[in-house]
Image (cartoon, rainbow, N blue to C red; front, top):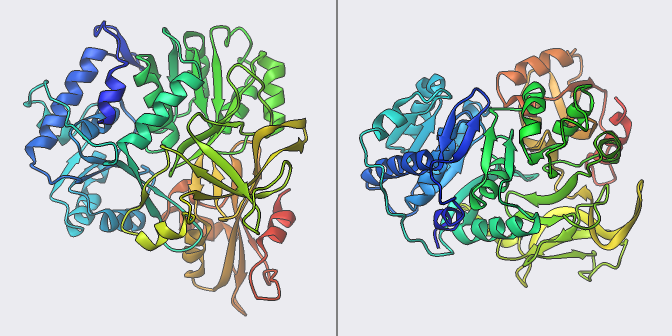
Length: 508
């Protein structure tokens, strides 16, 4: 079944009620949402695109950007969201790899992005601005506001999300209509969405958390969203009294706690605070309880799987634990001998269920590598059941993530691929080699640090390396610090020992 059909069943009968209220005072009714989505779907249909055609989108957050996503799946096409911070080198790869039929970009990026798109074979490039401007809406305006949702099979693709590993290029995780709809239905029940809930939406929508978990949650429940273009603590505090649910990365909560205006009174109408996309420090978890009386619900998921586990809504929520497997999702922790781990035994986290992606775009061998012979997806995370942490005993059926076997850094909710940053640094004049690591950060979860070895006789400036990177890669990937050293620690096989680097730099 088409994902849009599943979401639409939850829309309220009163289509004149508010679906989205923006932080600058605009109101979009459910009727506005349906008509705008239909106009955009009709525009896409008029292009006579082949089945499975990709629509790649790199725009700033706006209600219209959400409508474009809904229109794409409604029209039976494949949505491909791209981080608005990506630069030309990154975009060239994504467009060349995915070969989208349509590209939608911000107006100020059209001059350079359209050239890359046409080079990759894209036939149609539109623009969409933050203020309802751009050629996409102009072209859609003349189309009908009625559209019959295209019938889709469960296993057909709805979206491709590019994710990162530790070797090679970014991979496009293929998610089906069934993957996304099943997860939305489970989360609606598991988190006890209620009639009258209002979601305060401050997450980006090029990411699983903001697009699939948050937006799908409100849509399938027919709930109003208060729409913020980005994290703004002043705006969060302003709108919290009118909201009941907030989903955020740990940065949201550390910044709220640091503001004296954030009080129990501000939270009095809230029902649920959810954290994910990066580890939530126990210190933040406990301070939040003390200051507000609310316990943050932490959960665990990834681009390839959407949500996998969650702390209990009505039961216990444990600092440092990501909770129980969601209904219909199976989770196992395996040791190196390929045996199930016992409680408090650390091993590789593997998962199975209707929410698990079907593979990586154009990478059949990589897809095969990431699944076990009996069909479980290897998450690349290392975890354990139960045990103890700084907050005490963890229930035996609660999962704790204790590390990342894929050397992935998560900063501010964004996945960062160290090898990519290292490749840019290693190409700089005077650089012999580099190692990029993530270290604990109270605000971002992890901060990026680069350790760089100069070539003999060369002097390197860490600030200059950072400045150079800022013009070449997305800002969230740019190291917060660059350390210049004479050599990197290595083991007997010559592999850089990043665990030692993390220990040495974790307090810097």
